[in-house]
Amino acid sequence: MDRITKAARLMIVSDLDHTMVDHHDPENMSLLRFNALWESNYRHDSLLVFSTGRSPTLYKQLRKEKPMLTPDITIMSVGTEITYGSSMLPDDGWVKILNQKWDRNIVIEETSKFPDLTLQAETEQRPHKVSFYVDKTKAQVVMKELSSRLEKRGLDVKLIYSGGMDLDVLPQGAGKGQALSYLLNKLKTEGTLPVNTLACGDSGNDAELFSIPDVYGVMVSNAQEELLQWHAENAKGNPNIIHAKERCAAGIIEAIGHFNLGSNTSPRDVADFVECKLDRVNPGYEVVKFYLFYERWRRGEAANCETYIASLKASCDPTATFVFPTGVEKTLHECIYAMKGCYGDQTGKQFRVWVDRVLSTPIGLNTWLVKFDKWELSGDERCCCVTTAKINAKGSGGASDGYTWVSVQQKWLEGYEKKDTSIWLF
Image (tube, one colour):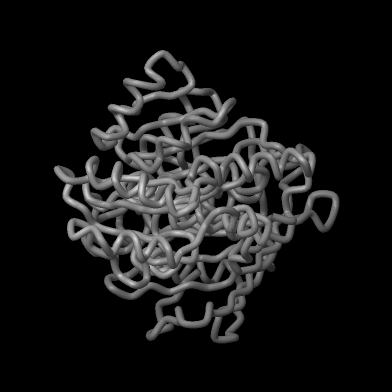
């Protein structure tokens, strides 16, 4: 959060399952397209917020399964937990609000009297959230009676039913919508209210996100009936909420373009980087472009021609160095030459490369220090290097003329070391 010293250009607040993450997309292409767009165009001056019904345990599990970016803010357990940064520091002010008229023991006592309620896994039970499964044919009757009983016990609670089976009992002040409202008020108080905010969801527990004033909203094309019904009854005439034509993260990209919130052309949608010219360039785009080309080269999806190799060499200072995670040092030109021999070696295989947490800091007139996590998925093995690069702007035209790589240094992220480092090129 400290990197944003002024109002974010865009804040995206997105649900995860079936919104940002498409569980029916084994290649994770819509998510990877969004990742490339965010890191190249938005990470440096915008905020990414994940708002999920998952508990911290299941959220961390999803991060190990899918190529997800690291958000600036994480809202978990249906809006009952707000944390900041990669270290996930909790928001103590939010906890104090949720403690009002809430007694978890009473909730457990009263819900135990309903045979139609089945407790979810222990990982999903949180200080301010008690979660059950209930058949959709019984849900409305159970919710009405349970709400009455808890009110008589002096509690002020909220019942949220989603996914046709999940029932969450929360403090009245909790929920994805209230958590977002709290966050926006906090940013406004600090003088950093985002210029634009886009909320993204697919199910009933996301409806609250679309009820916040001055927030754009997108229901992805695969949105569940419960959310579409809410929209028809409550927001059908609202031009700031759309039902996307695209699924999941692709629908989020579609919404960015629909509302003119910024660029919605992902680098993964650019066929030829050599011919591509951008109006707005930044070191983040250079990093994303470099590693995306590397992925395409290894997968045999880029043309095997000297033009591309020459372009890569031209983007590197002749004396530029690369320090591998093992400590071995080579010139970048040597690395590019070695890459020539690996063309297409991952053709037809599960091989993907993406970058996360790209942060560029100017250290001179036309020089940046760029830090990022470089991820590489090869089959079932997922590896990550914490990377630091020094990049200069080309020529006298500044960044608009492109960039030159001066040095790169990597070290393994603990727990994600590569077993065979003999073919670790970049």
